[in-house]
Image (cartoon, rainbow, N blue to C red; front, side):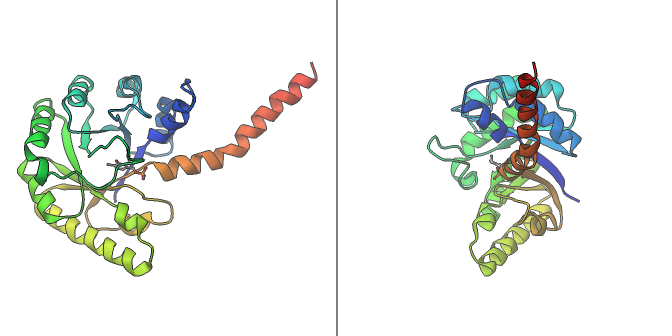
Length: 242
Ligand code: PXP
């Protein structure tokens, strides 16, 4: 059975909308663990648009399950990862203007840069996973760098507009997953997975870890909203009696 990595970036997105202290992704991580998360995932972006350095430092102290740090293959973030020592680092491509991670890392096209980063992480015993599109060339390059795992980008599957297109994308993920397993790589999936589309991916043979963020945070807002409003209302009612 695949394990669940809960990406809590968008808890920090809400906090950063006001540059305040709430909601704290550290609390969200603890609650995610209570809910059964096997992995806590955060993406420390170079522009620090959501997760901050402090979050990762505190999470390293508090998270009891695996901490997975998503990061660009850039030296400044690599230095930070070498200081924090998460159990796992997932290397992702990063562009300043993108709303979210678009497409997988082009390992083949950036071999030297990715190798420099991977080698430093390996020297500190950090498990490295590369977030890539479901392509044999990218999988072979990941294997050649000595990485333990790949995370296959499920965005095209998630964005498919017709059932037949979705079936094609799923078949591609399955084929790439099979090839990765033959290469001896651990198999992760992520991006755009939701309560509606997760099950076919979770059922792919050999799927070990699913990283899911936006959909879980979106649902948490909704299932917790009634309670949050009720509590605020109770405070106001109580104040009117004083
Ligand atoms: N996996 C990776 C490598 C990602 O970059 C992201 C987005 O930060 C996710 C998983 C989670 O994607 P989503 O928020 O769409 O669930």
